[in-house]
Image (cartoon, rainbow, N blue to C red; front, side):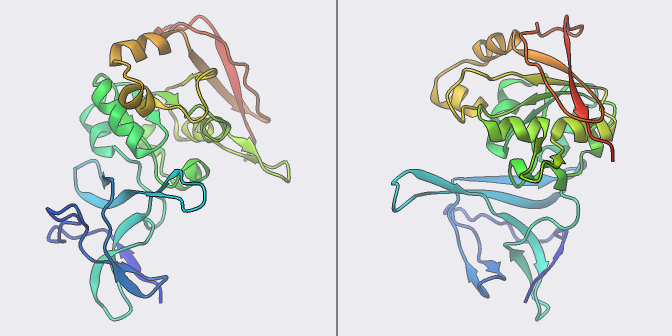
Length: 266
């Protein structure tokens, strides 16, 4: 039976133990408890700093391809069918909170850097303290499940992964039925963002991201900022259709060029 998800109380037990393993987590789909040893733990907090739940990054080697894979389950506080209250493998209830809401609230005047994935958000937050860095849960196809309203009136910069799914997550895409699905750019426009800019990562290896640059490739934050400086596009999101013409634009409060991302009519 399915659990009922709630925001955790102040006295909820810590999810992670000193050993690096989680406390027992209820898996409603398999009707049993399980413990995990995640590579990373991402706490989701509200603007006041209260914990709302977690996303775990669990890594494993695929038996067939021998490649490193990841699993990023959401963990929330739930009430089970028997009334037991505990951490569960359940998604955030309703519209999902953004990752980094506490940092967003702490920097009300700062521009906002939106990275794809919690890992990249954390790396970006450390590398670029002049920005309020955020992300969302569930991957590129889950952008519409997040609540983007906290970004009303904010200057936003979108930094995608260097692949087609990353670009689609930020700029939208058409499904097999030729129906347009909004990306972060369109959702920010609807939320009332003040400005929307996009870092063009064309030319980088497939899947390359902020974390790869800084943690794997050995770039310094200054190097990454200088690289991105000539790759920022200011986006105009307007009604009906969709298009984007990428071009090199100098990273400056007043950009030389503007390019349009069109917003389908509701």
